[in-house]
Length: 513
Image (cartoon, rainbow, N blue to C red; front, top):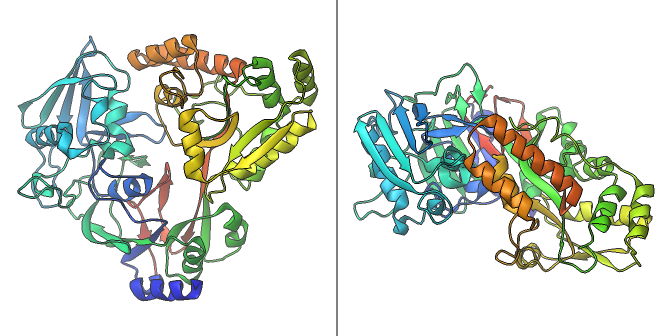
């Protein structure tokens, strides 16, 4: 069966070695749509964001900077944002970008019929409200907020929001329905054959944002290859075979294949770390785990370095903070974590009066997350200090349902990326009575998080995040083990290929014979 799939793959795209003008990238699933921030998933975002851009984008360290904007200024009261557009930016159809295009896009995003994923973050339902968007001249856009926000620009830059991409009006049909993305990015949409592939070609008139080198979605961006084909290859063994044969130039691989493919002279194996978090959640409403001492004992029982090295095939490293270690907010305080101390764990269990009640860890066996391996290693270490740890393996959908309802004792669970620390902490913090999925229900922590959404001074925000980390280590509502690691293999004929937050970046990538 695998050989048949591989032969079909070869027939579909031809041997990559003969195609120096094309790069073939394997994708585990098809894109859901080409409409930025609408009917999307992470795979979709990774494709679309090679073709479209927003006013602002992410630096490598998770901070936000101007992208289609040349500059962004904020009024003293934090309510008015002025975006000066870069001159001479063109859409893929040759039309020049103006402030009128920005306003047209903003109106479209705010219309309920568009079903933009992030509308609630800007219309007052989930925080701030953009009360007006105006264009004083052809290269200036002004947005007025109802209250100050430290994450307004971050929300505009979010990849799951499609970067609030600025598109040509001709991206939609006459009736307003979606047609295809006509953006300003380094590559332009070419063809989408559903279930098989999507191709995009270099935009020869692309205007790169300033910068001497690439920096996340900012900095120097050059379309150096004529065509990119995103090929749908759901079977990982087929993708691996395609990488080895040369039919595929780049693709994600399983951690179990890392060591083997490292020995292939034609391949380079990349370990990519993103801001997602691999964690052990603890239900603080549980009769056993409501005791803070027992939660701390669990943390002390774990040799986290061993867990991380084993479950990531040596590609990850321990980070007990909700802030990724490449973040501008990763301070000396954020580096502090749990120590491995089985003797102290036993003392705490005795002091808490633990009588061997079972503690069940939920896990799943999805290929690209370490849920099961983390659970197995944690169970053995917890048992070594006298904790009656058990594992219950569930289908991912069932585990997710249990998470959303708060129906678990412990859960080996992975969170997707949130680059601003306020959004990262908010991801798992809040009142359980209103949102059962929330893990950390602590009024003091919530007060700090709420302040971090309003405070814009970086030093003051750093203080808030450091306080949150200190309290989180003390209360231990969850254990953040390490940031998500992805493994990719790339043919050595390809240079400049990079991956950021699980998404392939095709600019500055080229091929040789």
